[in-house]
Image 1 (cartoon, helix red, strand yellow):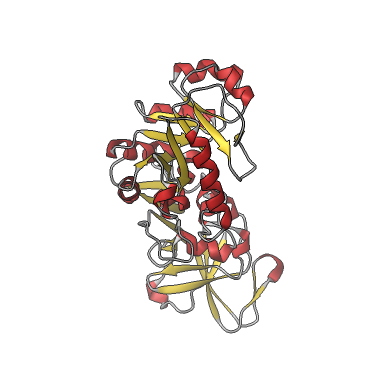
Image 2 (cartoon, helix red, strand yellow):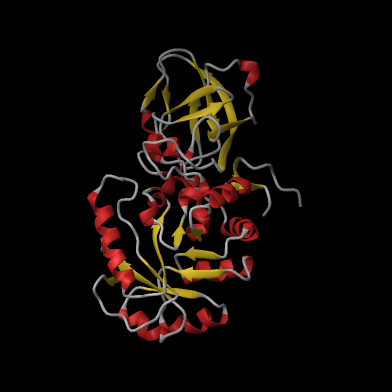
Amino acid sequence: MNLPAPACVLTVDLDAIVANWRMIAAKTKAAAVVKADAYGLGAAPVARALAQAGCTRFFVATLAEAVELRDAVIDAEILVLSGVEEADIGTFTRLRLIPVLNSQAQARIWAGRPAALNFDTGMSRLGFDGDEPVDCRPMLVMSHLACPDTPEHPLNRRQLERFAMIRSRFPGIEASLAASSGIFLGADYLFDWVRPGAALYGVNPTPGRPNPMAPAVRLEAKILQLRYVDEDTTVGYGATHLTSGRTRLATVAAGYADGLFRTLGNRGHAHFGDYRLPLVGRVSMDLTMFDVTAVEDAALVEGAMIELIGTHASVDDLASEAGTIGYEILTSLGPRIQRHYLGNA
C-alpha cells in the first residue's frame, strides 16, 4: 500500500548524535540516556547507532522502556532509573536488566543482585538519603545534580561534596554524578561515568553560552493552503491576530497535537530558506498559520515544507519562544510526525 506523503517530518541525524556522544566520551566513560523514546527521537535507532559506535551502557526511566530497548540493543547494559518492584524481578533477570535502587525496600527486593545505587544529594526526588546505610555492594553509585545548567549555583558544589563523601563509603566502586549540563561544570564532576541525554540530541547543555553540541534534528511541516487576506482580518481561534495590511497566510499541517506548543501563538517563527516567517494567531490542534507575505508568490507553493527546527532556528530557539526548554520540545513531538533517519541506524 502506498502511504501518503507525510505532512510533518522530523529528520534525526544519527551521525551527529554519535559525534556528540564521542565528544563527551573523550572526557570520561559515557553512557547514553534514551528514556522517553530517546527524548522523542526514537530509542531503537538512536541506541543501535550509539551501540555500534561503542556505547555499552544505556539508561531508561521505566521497565517498559527497558524491555523495548533490549530488542534493539542486545548486548549493552540497560539500567532502569525507577528501580524495581517485586513482581518484575523475573523480567529484570530474564532480560539482564539492571535496576537503579532508590530505597531500602528496593534493595531488599533485589537481594544483592547487580545493581546501581542512587543517592539523593539535593534533588529531594528519588534516592537513598546521603547518610543512609545500605547493605549492598553495587556496581555503580550515582546521584543527580539539581542546578547544573546554572554553573554559579552553590548547590552544585554542595552536591559534589556530599556525593564525594558517599562515594568514599564504596571503595573500588565506580561513580556517576553528571548528566548533560553537569558534564560541562569541570573535571571534578565527571567521576567514572557520565550520563548525557539531551546534549546527545543537540540541546545546549550550557545555556547562555555557545552550544558545544552538534545539531541533531530538523522539523518541517507542509503548507496545506495559501491565501491572501485583507487588512484588519482576524486570524485563528479567539481572533488574537489582526492583519495590518494585505497579508499572505500559509496554513501548515502541524499543531499542538504534534508538539507545537500553544504558547507559540503570535510569538513563534518558522523559516523558508532565509525568510523568517512569523506565526500568527493561536496554534490549534492540527494547524498553524504563518505570515509569508515577505516571500515571493512564485517561490512558495502549497505542498512546500517550512522549517520549524533546523538550520535557522535550533530546538533551544523554539523552546525559548514557547517559554520552555529544549527537553520538553523534543519529548512533546507527537506520533503523527514521521521520523526520518540520516546515518547508520
